[in-house]
Amino acid sequence: MLKILSYNVKGLNAPVKRHSLAADVLRLKPDVVCLQETHFKRLAHPPLGIRNFSTQYHAAGPTKARGVSILIRSDVVYQLHRKISDPQGRYLILVCSLNHKTYTLVNVYSPNTEQLSFISGVLHRVSLVATGVLLICGDLNYSIDPSRDVRIFSLNGGRIICST
Image 1: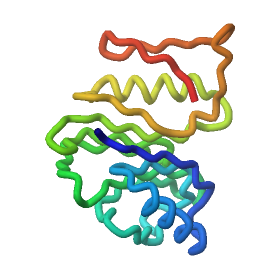
Image 2: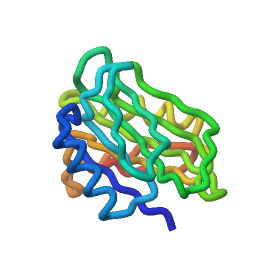
Image 3: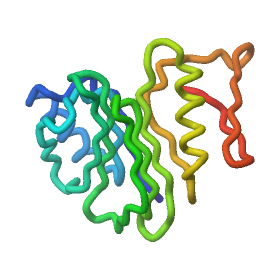
């Protein structure tokens, strides 16, 4: 079984926040960590330095805003097949093998407005590459009331119900 941790960290540029995240990750022992709102600037982010998580992927925008990351535990047998990252730092898609099983990992940080069109666009991109088990993590910045506001998206003939 794969253990996944997903956090909206609301910025990781302060060392105290990175240390707090590292302590949580070490305590909870996840295999995969998905982080949203990292606030790293493209090509200028600080090292996360979380023990046993040497495989790290980041999607960051041109400014210290947005940003998503996917971290993979070192003792997970891992092979990357494809990586798609948003130049604005809103999503990261990894098609990979984890412990010899194929996954498509998606980490999303949706904007505060036009969430449904953004999510639909991301799901369309995912549908073009999705292989194996699909795992979607993130902060969709959207809350639904299932009794009146269920949105269903189609993905490779399957159904995904959008929820936070």
